[in-house]
Image: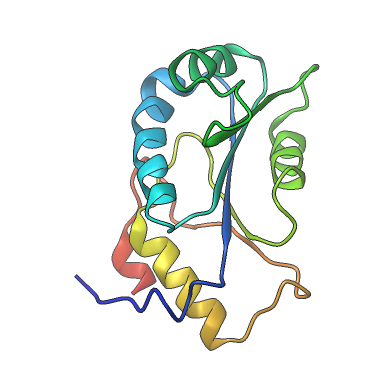
Length: 150
């Protein structure tokens, strides 16, 4: 495992934005547990989920009590069907504007190394929030090939 200097990258904050529709049972139920652990470790700073049809919304609300303002997951549902691209745009628009954004589809997963690598890249390239930046992992499938990011 690589050693990451957390102190150097403490000021780089990430919003994990997840658009979803009918993915809780097969993917999100498992992935949200891991992302919550990342959040508790300070690897990501907020988790935002925007559900297209309300099915995942109800399940996440029931499991994580996301209706509570102190909930670690900010949960939204669309009042009308927006479609894939507009739902992605909406979830990104709900992120804290002082954070970098990691847009992850609900049927994909990224691990710790992705966020550490992204933070290293941001620091090395001196990317600022004045530079529009949404991090969207590539080579997506249910699990990423992480050696690509090292």
